[in-house]
Length: 259
Length: 362
Ligand SMILES: Nc1ncnc2c1ncn2[C@@H]1O[C@H](COP(=O)(O)OP(=O)(O)O)[C@@H](O)[C@H]1O
Ligand SMILES: [Mg+2]
Image 1: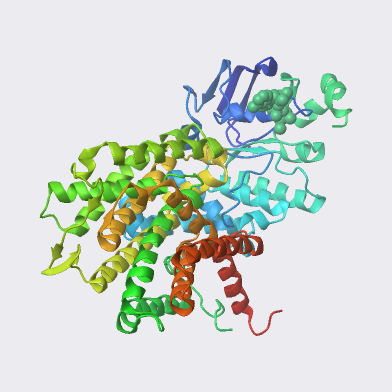
Image 2 (image 1 turned 180 degrees about the vertical axis):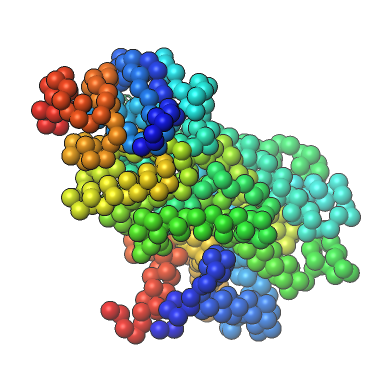
């Protein structure tokens, strides 16, 4: 976690409704550069919706998103991806017909720009670009220890590995902020340990700011620098893991309740 | 152990990114090229007359392979369905006809390529609905394009130069002093031209598919929401797929009329043909270039051979054989799809996979 605590991302008074359903109600919090920020809360609390607001998939009715000290204008998701925000999904959203390396290469899509003409010839600038980005992707694949499945179609991989490929794809975007939606859901203890280790490594080695949603409180307490607690779309608490854990409202609403 | 990766190490990513990283594949392609460029022109296909080999088998199979490649780019790689393939071939054919009328001295190959570009633009326009609709609704939209274009081929007399037949017809076209198209052209000359275009177009398609643009198509196909969040613009990805696909289909339409049939009317571009091309793609294998070859060859050649054998060997009535070949093809399609829903390309892949381990399957 950075010493200066400079704010890289801030959401202010977000209100998001789907028809009559209020998914997020007047929620504000910030994310420091280089920290691991956890978002917790019972099912339906609005956590995934919050990530969707941050990466521009949902447009809140009210509220502002501040990024790098500037208020972000309304943008399309692909434009927001360009600003350096990457994410993984609660229900894995890999490209099932493509192999691991192809999936990871899709993360470099925005950094590649050689035109149709060169693409058709696959020569000169186009192949140079391909090689250069392939190199970076291979580094990430090494880093996440998925070399052995490099050429396997992702649809046939076990769940835990799919989650890891999805992380690799997001990392390939060289993001400033990485949004992880329940990266360890449905994993066994070993897989969770591996994934936790990768998340910490990414944070420390690449200095990537991470916002993650996670249900396993033990994991959250280990990983997170600070925690936001949502409940029924409202902000319930915001603080260090220890502070949040001892907050009476959180204990009542969440910690005691199985989900 | 005839086909394997073991021992072929790549020291550079560039080598691994080549079209055929395996030496065996390179050899295989070289053999196929020699067969196509040398053996078939010299010896034909054993048991079949040379004229039949060229006019009824090789030239149409090559042309329909270009069509199938085009449709496969759209359906197999970009996941956008179209029932307008027949009509888009018509766009290629009619625009080639008009370009040749307006610029009578223009090289015919350039005319064919320009007509591919015209079809690309038309395809892009009719691809616009794909930005809003998917699946069945897109089928209906492309079907509407099919019928609209068929209507235009009949009603817009300018397209066929107001002639009484209502069709379009090729005239003799020379290139380097050789008649390459039209009634007096030699089948072998046309064969080489169509083959060379097919080889070039295959190479271009395989290049595009393995690069940035090809990946953007597959991303849209596999999961459009994730694609968008990663930074693919659906507009660019979908419309470029429609354009590139239509480019191929347009070229194949122009080739069909001016390098094979010699003349055509609206019936050559009707919706039944659209279905046939769809069969070729599905039988061959969605998202496979090799499959496009196999699908086009199988769906075209089986009925032709059945008809020919029935006629020459058993003296059956042509009409009876026509129906029999349709039934046979239908059964073949159903059987193939039950055995391997991913088409011939997957069967071929499985075979290669086995060869990789042979003779020790474990
Ligand atoms: N696209 C959507 N359309 C309608 N309702 C939605 C949509 N996305 C989320 N919601 C609703 O918003 C609420 C919060 O959902 P979500 O953010 O997925 O919760 P969490 O991730 O915390 O479990 C839920 O009531 C959910 O039904
Ligand atoms: Mg969720």
